[in-house]
Image (cartoon, rainbow, N blue to C red; front, top):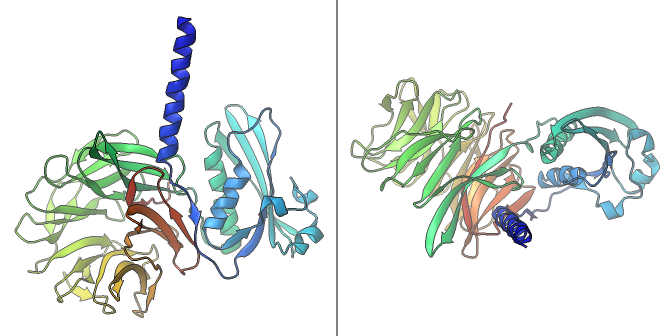
Length: 432
């Protein structure tokens, strides 16, 4: 009887953990219509092992491609056949459906894991474009699916896929009647969400290091804002600032050796750069206005930042070698939270137009502005490492959610949380 009771308690506890894990997930909701997405079919992958796999790998690949906004995967119920190899592809049947590409695949058990072999077939060209393989451990089926989606995406678009990347975000919930804050880490599709660290006080502004091994963020755990860095593998962390006043907006230099940030330790909010090797701070701006929200240009030679030195918040560029400051934005009465695309050509920002806060892009060379979103309280943009999409925080009713949009304003999707408010997304770099 005692053994049965213990077993029952273990089962109940395990089920509770599953419920908590499920509540932490972000739910993907496709919300945008794309003009002329590429029709593609991801045929259900074959499985030569025993039992049932824990993940539907082909469905994960299909969902990845759909979220990009560039592809329109054929629903499984509309498929006329389920080929497992290129030789089994009936070109005529797929042409009837208007499908341009078909992906076939086979999964085999291996010692300690799996081998996925997948093929990309061009229907109208009646040819196999490639056959590739991905290996993974018993817990890496989702990783294998994301890798396959990356390969397919790049082969067709010429752009490196970013489905194997991750995101950080802040989740606020209530525990015992008090607010609780967690720095969360998840796959870029919201799956496998897990806590990096939980706080009793607000945490904000998470930012990945360029190698994806560390994160910098602002925590109020000491009673005032302080900037921390934390190793995501070991959990080891270091408090970097403890100045009175503002300590905010940490952002890593492209080579990972410095952090730009905002400090008011000398009286006014200014941009500083901290050398992580020496621990020395260098003040970069000197102006009576508020200078804030720095972000590095990809070449590491300059910073973009928000300042009201022109009367209203606008975005400026600071050349580090000379100290020269140039205004970049002129369209609209509010432009802030600048982020720069990996190629250095596009500026992403929070833009106010007609009293509504949206996410917009600006071509840095021409100054041409484009509004990407339509909701009223969009903030905290973060760009994918391939420059194809960005993630941001917004509101649904009074609840904070995350959303993503392609930089051409085509594909869009939402990532609401099943539990609590979520905000402050940070898209990871590539991990290789």
